[in-house]
Amino acid sequence: MDQLQSKFRGSLVGAAVGDSLGAGGTRYTDDTAMMIGVAESLIENKGFRARHMARVFAKNFEEEPWRGYGPGPPRIFQMMKSGLSYEAAAESIYPGGSYGNGSAMRIAPIGLFYCDAPQQLKKVAYQSSRITHTHILGMEGAALQAYAVALAANAQPKALDRNDFLNKLSDFVEADIYKQKLGMIRDLLPKGVDRLKVIAALGNTVEAFNSVPIAIYSFLANVGFEQTLKYALSFGGDRDTICAMTGAIAGACYGIRDPARREPEDIPGEWTETLENREYIEELARKLWQTKVAGEK
Image 1 (cartoon, rainbow, N blue to C red):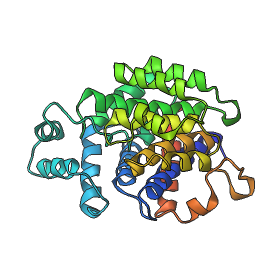
Image 2 (image 1 turned 135 degrees about the vertical axis):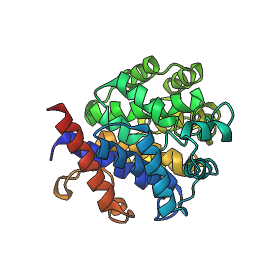
Image 3 (image 1 turned 60 degrees about the horizontal axis):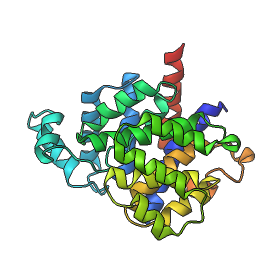
Image 4 (image 1 turned 90 degrees about the vertical axis):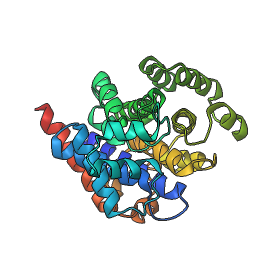
């Protein structure tokens, strides 16, 4: 299997596994439902089209409104049905824009699709965020999470340079609060710091700047998908989203191998086998990889 295809599969499945475990059950939440929408739109359009992605989000919500959506997106989708643009709807619900982690939680397919084009990745991450989250800190959080996925997809797990990973993230992001928290991650590594100290430094709540950093830290502080995700789970707070983001990064790093070649650091088979809608999520990952490869020829 192509290594990059394995990483695409690992990231999308890893995000869904993290979401499901973080939610405390076997079903995934809106985090994965919206990630699926991002992937579906990228595949259909062979790249990013904002209005199409917004329509896919709305359609998927109407089909499965019970996925645990926050209050904002359903109101945006309803306003879109009445003829309002998604930009105007998002601004009307959250004057000044939302800086929650709702656009970061779904961003993994964009991080994968643009994994070799950081500046295009940043532009698309911002634009995709604006469908629901227009505050600069919401957009920056989505871009940072996407770039972490991209770096993990380009990394060799056994040769991961954590300092270099953090340096690249710090050079990429613009908002001071994210730069500060990336610096805190460096100070908190290696693992062994009291969890309450980590939470006090990085946060574990729904704001993007209080959840994306702890997902990145959870990935960098551990080796192997299982250890990484269990560590992220231990921080509590907005667990489904933190674990979805952590799973997306770790899955992009470790990938999914054929069962006969599976290694200890891969996603545990018992987690993938019980994942709701796994075959469709894996098929989306394969199609996303195929679309990217075809566009490069």
